[in-house]
Length: 219
Image 1 (tube, rainbow, N blue to C red):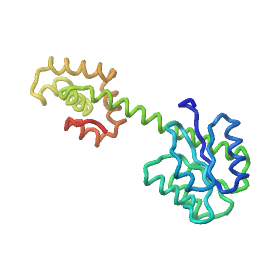
Image 2 (tube, rainbow, N blue to C red; image 1 turned 30 degrees about the horizontal axis):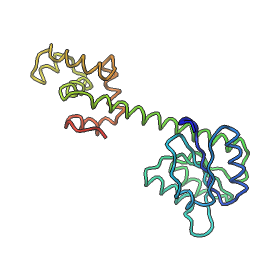
Image 3 (cartoon, rainbow, N blue to C red; image 1 turned 135 degrees about the vertical axis):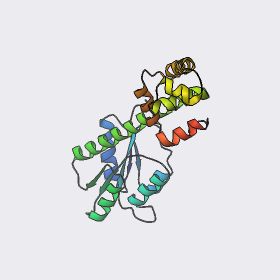
């Protein structure tokens, strides 16, 4: 499977609903995995590519409800986008699901285009998340390649200081600052102080700055 191909997980105890949604998703080029209960889904190892979860709200027996599964995933740090479907009209449940970040809440019966649009939005959201995570990992990789002095200069540049001010703060010459600054910019593949600020912001400015100052590996 291509790493760019999306996976749609469908969790519903009604086999007709599962199969119908699964067929629609396969027709649009997605990989599909079907589950009859939330317990079955929880036993699944999720892939690393973009994905979306189509989840019924209620399940018979002792299986967790859709909202309980949503909460479990959030607590476990699994950020998969969720499209809820339900055969019951419950405003309280739908509001709670949306407040917790659900992509959509569709009452049954829904139109094919409605479910496809909701899944598409969920997959697009997940693609953006994965792209952000890739960018953060790349930024951290570059920063970790810097020397301690280069990190110091990077942080002072991000505060808006020019070479002469940085030299005074660090107790070194302007020439020394400019040499280290040039090396730092080359390693980071950046061209301006504005790009330095954006780089640090992309990593989560406060937490990452503290680690950079301490010379610690970035998370």
